Length: 348
Image (cartoon, rainbow, N blue to C red; front, side, top):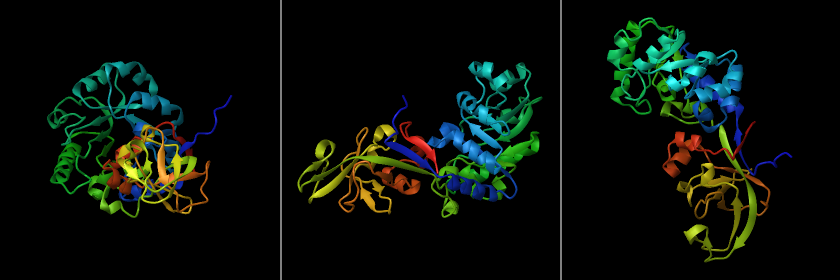
């Protein structure tokens, strides 16, 4: 017996995704433009993202773990797939068979790869973020001798702000490029792309901006929203002035109101930060304010202005990332990747 249709879904806009990727690609002055699709495509649908971007000409995709890579491997026939989190001993049984490149981050990982015969790989060098990657002294040493490096990469720490570390990391990476032989060199993430073509090198690796996040002012007006959470109205009810709304009656009706109870809550990634602050949108764009607390599986919105809305109708959650981030205090990354699996993904 098939399951009934979900009362909660995530509408994904294919044209917006492609427009975002093309705009980012065009900023690179001829550099290739890949795509970070880790965390299930930043909470969207990694398989769909890979297919749509590959059809548009994207050839380089990045995931975090080998488990993510293996899920996508059947779709990655004509593209390059790299695993950012490197090569643990536990990964070796699949790493040699998968046809996916590891991104080597430590001297131990480099030696592990050499010990099994090596082959094409990527290497991460730490130029200042102090996260994953070989230290500068290691990279300039003999650790990498004999490796077949497809892409030498680093990651910017502060590209979303005008921080002096951006220039320092660019200078450090330029020195690495002069000293270490690789087929390609890659530094820029979404925000790094907006810093200018000096950061593009041979390959750019956008993530957030692909999915509608605005990483810097330069991208505003060019990046389109991709993900639209939608929830079904489970019940419509009338309440009177003075009635409490939701858990702990944190909001009291100042006048008679019409409420709609929606099938979404913090278990789905729509967190309590939006309590009495967020909104849903009717199909004509009418704003339906969230009233009371967001609960685990349910949300209450004011539909007094929309008498035609009824049980079974759908509304869109106002989830424009910059606005939602400002309202909730959550980063645009958290907003996307926190969207739960109960939202049924579909592409439009």
